[in-house]
Length: 222
Image 1 (cartoon, rainbow, N blue to C red):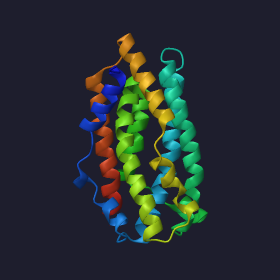
Image 2 (tube, helix red, strand yellow):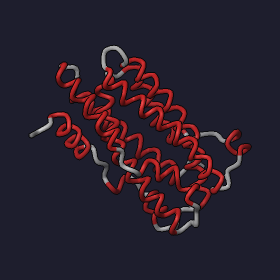
Image 3 (cartoon, rainbow, N blue to C red):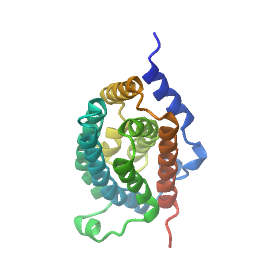
């Protein structure tokens, strides 16, 4: 039996899949040619991204609580995941040579912070169900990047299991999150509250900002 929400999530993810050529940095990490300083910058940028996304997801959950409880459940789970990811990020940062003083003095790169800035915009302005669809499509690409990085950190950089845990966390498929996303999208479809065109546009911009994140890290401004 066909499932409209699952079909829509699948086709949207496929349609928004990034061009492999849009991310030149992850292949360099994969073959071990990216310098440790670049990995350190990745860790430092994520110390800004993770808490920003957590607060955005919490705001989306609060906006959704009454009218879109299925979407609220999805965003609550995302926010909880960001907390866990933040805890795992510390070991990766330390393995890259980043200490607390380095974190405190770091000045984030605008090209890397465009993604969380847009997530915050979505939290304030977009329909929650549209955001569920857009984020789910984007997470597919992010999860693939994390799986590649986790493998490379072990194979080429000699990182410990603890230091790889941040990327392992995002690389691991989440059946629970998939179920929650499907329920949220289906509820919005049933209620006539899903704007597929707008959700696709949100997803397209997320992918563009995702690509900007990696290109900025790979070629930071002097």
